Every structure is written in structure tokens, then in C-alpha cells.
Image (cartoon, rainbow, N blue to C red; front, side, top):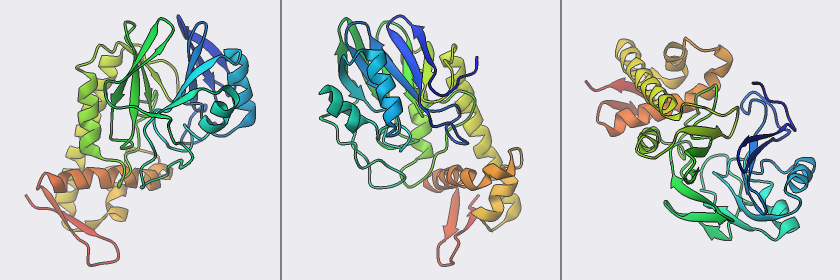
Length: 280
């Protein structure tokens, strides 16, 4: 199933998905906004500040929005929160924007959610799961009793997630993926793309993919000796479109920082561009 901007679908009882009007290279068809509830609604990730999209959210909810939740504060997920809250009087929930990375400073939650906190919408309950890695303030939301996880950018359909330091962290990302293996998650409603029907198979695939990429970083770095990220990225990501290499450098740095923290890699920061090498 393909998605288009503005598309509204019911994907589960009490759950609808509305695609924002921000299709692109990094966002796919656009950011998924989810409406959860039957009489009153929680809105998850209302997306960029787009008045047309905000009006569509209000129309779909009949204006009956009780809570607005952000998975994280990247600019394709949370900037519409303030306007939607002003229109509805709904409380805003999530975690405030960290200092580093491309963040939305306008998101200031009326209630900060911690791991395990719950949000009730009528008879439905969303439980927050703190999943740092893509962003330090990233939360997923589990719709209790259904197995459906609203994953934001922690897991995306059809592509891997960029882990961009300093706010992104590869070690934490892998730990957050492993956390989902211990949760009753059966299917995933991602921030971009369609529903992932076999959640646990996809999580296992993502962990294996990241570890395989790490092994490739180790092999190519050992072969190169001392090398900069600009040179190393063309070797480590020789299996992806070269147009993605500028973006891939963020995830490559995250892999290298993980190897450094593990005591396996080192770098020389005295030059304009850091030179990396394997210590093994």
C-alpha cells in the first residue's frame, strides 16, 4: 500500500492515520499523524506547522482533542503542536527539545512524560516508552492491549533511521531496539510509511543490520589504517546511493563513537578533520 499527502485511513479500531503535506527525500510520503480515540482523541505527532494539515486534524477529530503527544522534537514531527493546542485547549505531552541537533524549540510540553507514564483517552491507554538513539528525547507510545506501537522515527517503514550525533547515539539506539523485544509489541505504526505487521521480526532485522554495518566499519577501517569520515563513508556505504552519503556520515560517526566508547577505535582531533583508526 502506498501513501499520499493528505490521505486519511483507519488502521485499527480507534486509530486513524493522516499523512502530513511534507513529502520528501527524508520524510517519504510525509509525516504520519495519528488520531487515537472514539469520542475524544489523542493526536500523536501533528507534524510541521502547516495550517492546512492542522485544519484536517481538527476536522477529523471534530475538534475533540484532549491530548497532543510528540514522539520527539525534530521539525517534521512537533512544530504543529502549539497551534493545535491553541485551537483545542488540549494538554501537550512528550519531552522538551534537547540542545543539540535539528530540534523544534517551540515544543514545551504541559506535561513531561517519563518512561512508563500513561495517557488515557476514554477506554484506551497509551504507555510511553523512552527510546533514545535517533533523538535523546524520543518516546514511542504503546496502545495497551492491542500490541500497536506508535514508533515515531525509532522504527520507520522501508528505510533505516539516521543516527546523528551529538544528540543521536548508536549504543542507545541498539539498546532501545532491544527494549522493544521485551515489550508486547506485535505491529508498528511508524512516523513515516505504512504499518509494519510483524514488529518483532522487523526489530530483529534492524538490530542485525546495524551490527552488520558496524562489522563493515571495523573491516574497512582496519583496511584503511588512518582515515577521515569523508573518505571512509564511500567505502562503508558503497551499497547505497551516493546521494545518501552526506546523510550517512551522521550514522557512520555514531558507529565510530560507539567503537571508541567500546575501546576499539581511536581518533586524532588535532587536524581539521578527525582521523580515525582501529586500536585492535
